[in-house]
Image 1 (cartoon, rainbow, N blue to C red):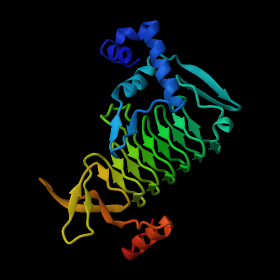
Image 2 (image 1 turned 90 degrees about the vertical axis):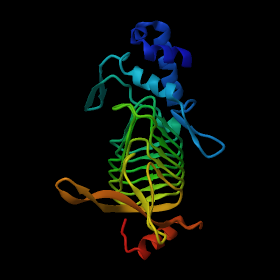
Image 3 (image 1 turned 120 degrees about the vertical axis):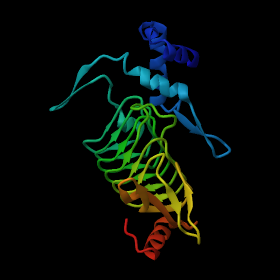
Image 4 (image 1 turned 90 degrees about the horizontal axis):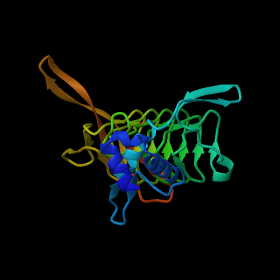
Length: 269
């Protein structure tokens, strides 16, 4: 399938070819069932991005036709089927939560009124809270909490090099935005309104000197919104950043250690 997908990526005329269409549809079915992933963890702790799988997701759109989907009094007009059979999958879905076919949602996931896009992978025990969105091909680990209004970016528009990765046990606070392939480590905590892009400065302020990183939040870090002064032709202005203010303690009660870290720094989530 990979060879067929890569060839069609370079020659879109092949999207009319039955063999190409069959291969693309097979990839989407495997994504839907969790047999394939756009990105996957390796034994050494790193992540491997399967670029060819993401290309199949992108090419699935032009081979689909628009159709009307009626759900009781509700009506949609789209190219993509909606995910179904939630009882069989062991997923709790609160109205009006929606997941597209081609997204894998593991048993034990709770979807409050929210949205999960095609190609995404949401692992067991995760809560996708009210009005949270999981973008195309995003990778969400086990026991993650995506709080109300969280925006997890996708990779379809524009096509990014890597999907957003949220590892096991992470807590993403209300109205956070994580986009452009930013990687959140295990059990990390983002306080409310943290915005992370690939270019956002993430500054560790827990030592005597600040340490700057970009694109990655180390595991068990507690992060809050911040700003720093930057000079422009028109003068000096404050620019958003993110501040690492502490670490979650390795305790059984992670919520307590989180509250301690926030309380010590007089921060609310």
